[in-house]
Length: 289
Image 1 (cartoon, one colour):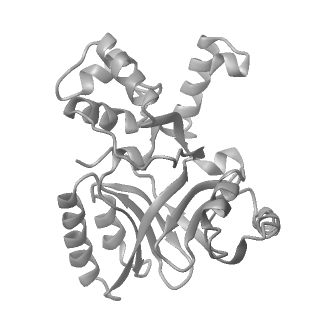
Image 2 (cartoon, rainbow, N blue to C red):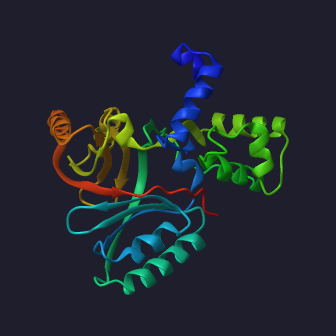
């Protein structure tokens, strides 16, 4: 990072510490390729509820496998993305959703299956292979530590490799952690490292969820082109008629309108539907088993 910015390591450390203590950085993250990690399905959950029913969002935040949760405009009021490693985890998720929604006033939800992830947290994914990597228990524990490291006053900087090894259920030495991380990076399981930030502090307060209907036979081609657009933070192919589902971040609604105009220059894009995020929850959790 220092080399990229033309700054010293000490300068980078001081800057990260300031950003963490001012809550601009909320967590340090390792970005994973879902196709290489999760053998079970990924699911977008849409729930009909209202702002008074806080127990619904509070219950969903506690569900293992949750990656993001937003309050949205439109027919549904909550949107969550969940990923699962094992079938049993998905079954437990369904039980929790059924029980939680049954206690709400609307009694209604919808599940949208994610078929492919083209972009996640700003990183374009390699979709040439969908084979799930064989991960050892030790590697899975390592990913659980790396996946999201919440910051605090006492720990404003990313964990060192020595600290990562100590946090694991079966502790590893620093050389063993370094070797495992290099293997996970070279095999495409870890695609990069990032930070979970308060986007209001970096000039991107507006978040839209965008459904895109692409021309028949051109969904993959459209997805690869859309993934290259800077405003697109996440992009998935789903089982719906509007088969591409994107998270788009901009500085204003006008900038989002300009983004849509550029999007429609792609002749493979036939139709879109937009929903604005009204509230975005911080999810300080790691991976589910």
